[in-house]
Length: 87
Image 1 (cartoon, rainbow, N blue to C red):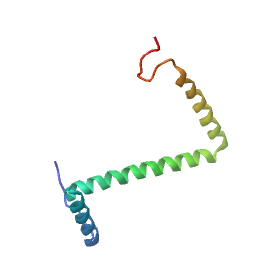
Image 2 (cartoon, helix red, strand yellow; image 1 turned 180 degrees about the vertical axis):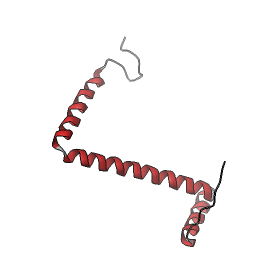
Image 3 (cartoon, one colour; image 1 turned 90 degrees about the vertical axis):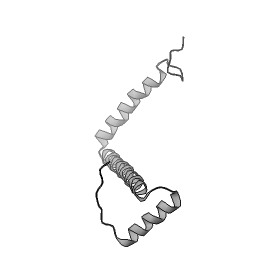
Image 4 (cartoon, rainbow, N blue to C red; image 1 turned 60 degrees about the vertical axis):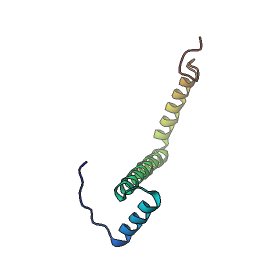
């Protein structure tokens, strides 16, 4: 695995060390998990912003609701919970 040096404030390094000690993970693993958590948070924030913008446009929001309604029809497609047919 490739590695690089990242400069951190001493306070951030100390928190990273404490989290690593508490979890039993390496500092690198804790940092990787934190980055993934932040990436997911940003994704959800961006998705929420997109839906907020969509809802602000009545015509586009109506189109969205109509599309959802069309997709609702797929729930009664005859498949059982296991993904097979009802036969």
